[in-house]
Length: 582
Image (cartoon, rainbow, N blue to C red; front, side, top):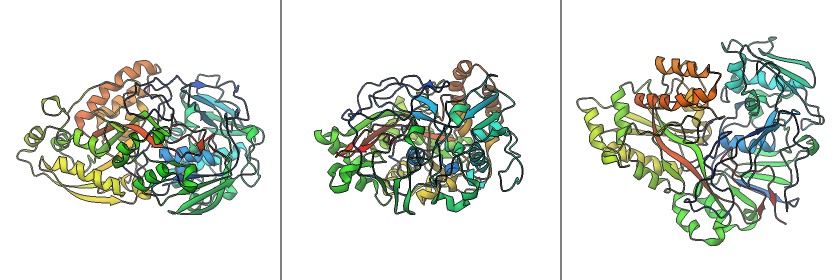
């Protein structure tokens, strides 16, 4: 899934469904040097045994206001458009899906359970047909009961313009040819493969088995929408809540205030609590101010959380303050940061390879704050992805991490090196870090024009096939524990569309496409996993990206905040049981 682009140094803790490699997830462990702790395997509740309401959080007290600081607004909050990890995290406050996750801050197993549905799904034919039954008491914020038809309508919307920025797994599984265009352009046509025999039941039917469906319907793709209340573009800031909080006031790019949703029934929800009275998102805080305010913890800031990492300039100060370290969390992540190279525009393979050789990893890691927040990357797959293979196709001189400028120059010898348009999200930290990256690459003879883009429009801009960006900053993590959910999303040229692309290198290599298709068709995913590492290396030979780093989470919460921990899914503080200490 996509990385939030508010700042390059923001880490995203999007741990795979059966991933390994997380640090102990408790406050005060954030030295950046602890031994890694394996994430327990996921538990999938197909039988509907998860209790409701969710068990009480020990020590939780009701009331108070929680402040969430974020550098810039969300790109999307209309549910079917959500695909960036920060929005996926905080949408838990107001959007519900057929399934969802229960996270354990003490390192226990991640659980996939029924959310709006009574269980994680029922299949009797190995995944070609799935049935979901809605829970009693699930309602929209206006008190209208949620029906299976509302879920189906939300899925229909995901096929339209109003779902183009969201994940496309479910849509492609249901309609591989993508002939269906949603309820507006395909009027009167039902969503392929979706039926609603009654108001409580929704059935998915596929031509081939899809064992991954319970994971796919945990995304906001499966958030119900009342057809009568869907206002298209306006739904971004005036959506109907199905969760414990609803919009009180939303001023785009300034703040979002949430209040309790009186029609959310905790007896229908195995995942969430609603301990705090109100939630205030402040979108006007840059990374340094965010860090400073949570450290100081004055007034409302004592009950606040960061959405970004501690900024690099403040890491030493935080590590030297014992009291602040007690409310600091450090954890490894499987999120990988890249510079995508637009292969539609930078067509010379040797130029792309020279960019990789010229990149100075050591200077970059220091620029983003050091090894507390990042480790240098050489692969497109994170080390926790099934099938990961350790290799370095573009090693530094003498095996070091400072790049190999002479090798890069030799590849460029005799070539007219183009001036490259370098696109990134426009934040103060990004401007500093991108300057460091460009500085290392210019040593080999590259020149750049910088193009900072409004963070709220970044992925929309670079995901347009006609973009004139040559180099684009971005990041990714597996959506579920399979190499296809990284390589198949980022490098499958057959999936390139006009808008909403995740293949930001726009790589369209016939051999790679064919191998991805072959691996996708293997029923034995363990057998497939063993081949994804080799395919990763094949992709890196084509050089559609410069891998930058494997991210770490290093963030602080306020002294009056309780019941939170680093989410093993979304790289944010878990908010499902968060409370303000009285």
